[in-house]
Length: 225
Image (cartoon, rainbow, N blue to C red; front, top):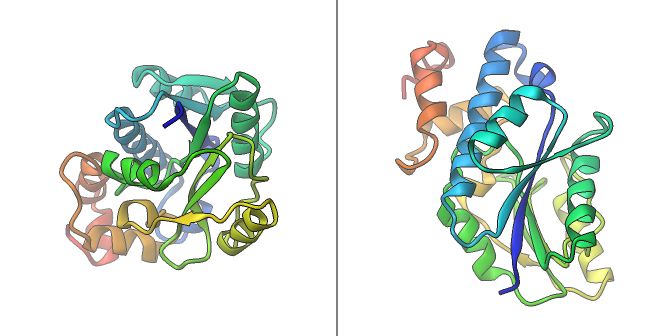
């Protein structure tokens, strides 16, 4: 397979996870997001199938984490959102002649390196699109493209089927990969409860699990881990 980089858009920590504000304080949301980002970076670093990791962000704390995990940092010119950051990363890699990219968000605390490998196993030669939907089959949690800028990206709560249709209009039948580690992104209290109820690989998620349990959040949500 051609060289594939992970593109990881990371928004400002202080504004992250607003849909959890009814159950988590601002400090808890900030800390949770940072820990999830670190878990995702760990899973990406442990996947030897990736040629590199490109984090797109403006957040100083995210930049420090990226450097700790050996990821390259691309500073976005403005906080324009998930789609804009992912598109910037894809365009940058395409301009550099990289063969492909896999876009992965920072809020997949159950992600393991095997999940990334499964995406790459399913991903065909260029032109190719591979999508991992969210667990409700509405959002697109991970998108692999070869070349990196093949698919116009548009993320949101209902992006999975539109991404599939866009790929087909471009003449590419998308491969679909459904895995728990790729499907569970953390946006709502129910997502947190689902995460806490799951049996997760030991190599990943330990930081997020430990934080939720030791902080008392798991008990508050009705799950003690």
